[in-house]
Image (cartoon, rainbow, N blue to C red; front, side, top):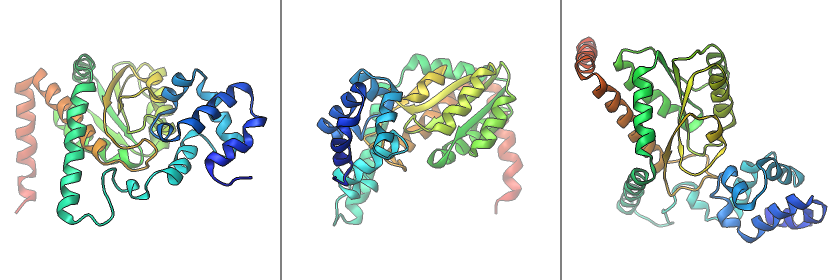
Length: 281
């Protein structure tokens, strides 16, 4: 028996159900494509359910689709891409800087094209009218959530960021209509964030997602989706250029909310600046 991920799929294929064999055939034929797809989009392309994909992954010893993608990527993708998509061994500091900046600029330009301006307007209005605002982010998305909370506190609304999955769930179950939860997830497949958003939605809160523009599991629990583009593969644990795009969307949301009531926003910003003056030399 083969020990590689593709080998495991080939060895296990005869024991799969027909629908699972369909998944296996697609993965074997398009491995590089698969590592860059969220499970929802892959399911739609193949014509099977997400559960079928997960079952096939478990049949060959993986806990789910994300683990299969990570292992598959380790075998077929240049290991340096775990650091950055464009970096090559031997690149000097100047080349590294230029490649990182170029990737960030591309992510911002393309995000501008894929992001729905209608959804952005809806998100701004929803946040402006919110009673309370919560930002949820786990792992690499946690600093994005903290940055968002730091900015939106200046609106004068009650704002909290949670990066602990248990606290996200506890806070979500106590929400009510008029509350807004913004979930941040590069892949759109983070189970903790999705489950917390699902609870929030069940309580009548409005859910907004800042996530990859492609179809993904988080879509089913969102009222408003703000799609981000980056050239980074979706199997990666860390993201770089997508983070810049997410921060930019948050800045746009903050400015948009402030412009809904500019006099109050300007006064709040003035007050917050004055109160921290004694804390600086």
